[in-house]
Length: 363
Image (cartoon, rainbow, N blue to C red):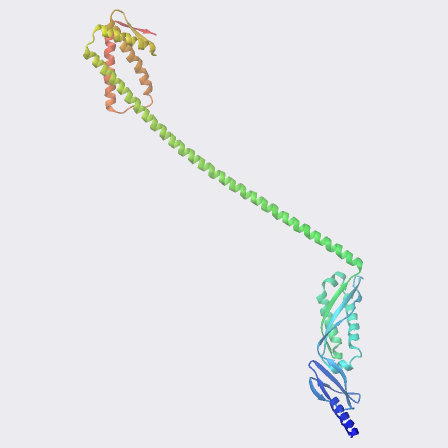
């Protein structure tokens, strides 16, 4: 009984071992009695006990291989170290299993030799600035070589380029000098632009200042012109008013003189009154600015003296009035008539003075 149970358990274990499940992105290489039988893809598969076996489980995912730095020499004899990163994918599990003994070691050595060949044709500066070119050349070379191994190289990257310490120091100095040169260039360009802007600003300021001065001068000239015109008009109006006032004053004086003469004639004054008026006129003449004095030959004739004094006063006033009238002349007809009347009255007194034997004496 127990023996039957043991046999049944062994049979179940053997049957279970024959069932194989291949997961996604994987492949199984199957050998039968040591020879290649086939490649199982994703799914459930049954393995013949004892005869078949899984030779290798292969991952079909893209894989990454990071290789250590490799020493290389450039065309200008500079030794540096470069480490690379390789991206590859297994496309044929059979070739991958039977094509090469150790695929990763083979790829690493192939990468090192290919890198040395490519860098040997480039100088230091080209090596530092041509990473994309180096990556493309290495990928093409490795992909061609690894085809018989069932491997496809998808991408190769230069991870680090490590030049010697002396080269690094020289590169740092060169970089510093280049940056200082660029700084000086940028500073010089900035100063140039600043100077240009400052000069343009001064130019614009001068132009605006000149225009402002021009406008100010124009406005000042116009203001002075208007002021001069207004002042001239005011002076003319004032002169006209003064002339009219003087003309009216002359007319009034002449009318007053004529009225006084008329009143004197109508009053028929006595000799005593004429003598008193003569003395009063003589006193006014003495205080005035007359340059002539009419003295009668007969000093006892008071009437002749009064007439002489009256004529002297009229002669004294007429020259001053004629000087003031030089500003303008009154075009009024009545003023001319009144002035003629006053002149006739003055001529009458002059005639009386001559008839009474008056004598003109300079003061």
